[in-house]
Image (cartoon, rainbow, N blue to C red; front, side, top):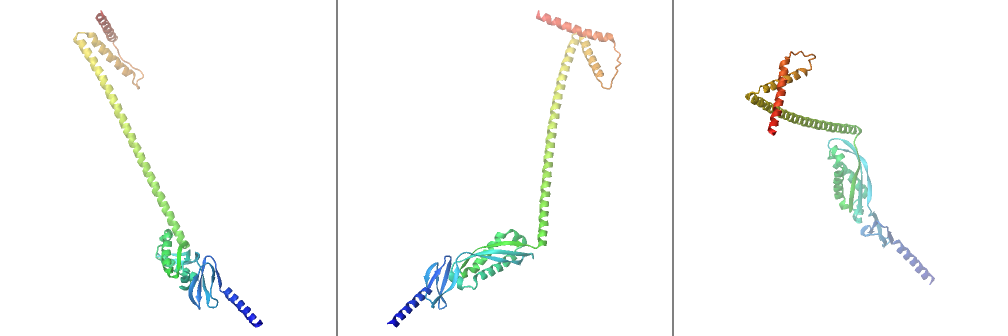
Length: 310
């Protein structure tokens, strides 16, 4: 009986150890593959599981979280034979644990090598200017190519980013000189356009000034002509009145007209700027006679007006 009891105890202990060895706990974010006699049979998700000890075992532990890999710096020759140094970063995530475990050996190294190869291929087909100005296009092309190539591996490449593109120092200096020349060119063009606009505005101002000046001269000429016309009308009217007076036999009207012209001539002579002393022989009797004639005309006009009122 004691031997049988000991055997049962040993059997129970063995059973407990056997059961304990088959307990598997899978952490969140991971999946384990199960192999039966070395052949894949199933995949364990996060949680508590049990497998047959010594018959089944855990094959691969696959992270289902997004993984980040740094792409080492490497030299790339562009289409225009410029040597640049490039590095980057790649993000991928396993979608099928079995494929990620058994379709490729060393998954991360395979993804890294594939990315580096395609970086050389994609960037080598572009000019240096395109590399520096179209980084988003490069990232998009790399993502498309690498993701298509890694689909059989059960993973999804979510993003590829080029971190740094470093041309040689002499090429950087040449690009700096080129950029400076372009800036100087744009500055010269802007300055020339500014001068051109200033000249146009100045010419427009001169044009407007000339137009206004011409209009002013035209207005002044019109005013002068109008004044001369009125003066001529007044002169004609005075001449007509004198002529009528002469026709009626009034000699004093002639004396008035002559005296007026005589006095105007004296005023013009006296107003000359280059004359200091004026020596004019005058016949006093004629002047006095002309003035007396003016007085008689005024008196006659007064008597005529008085008679009309009477």
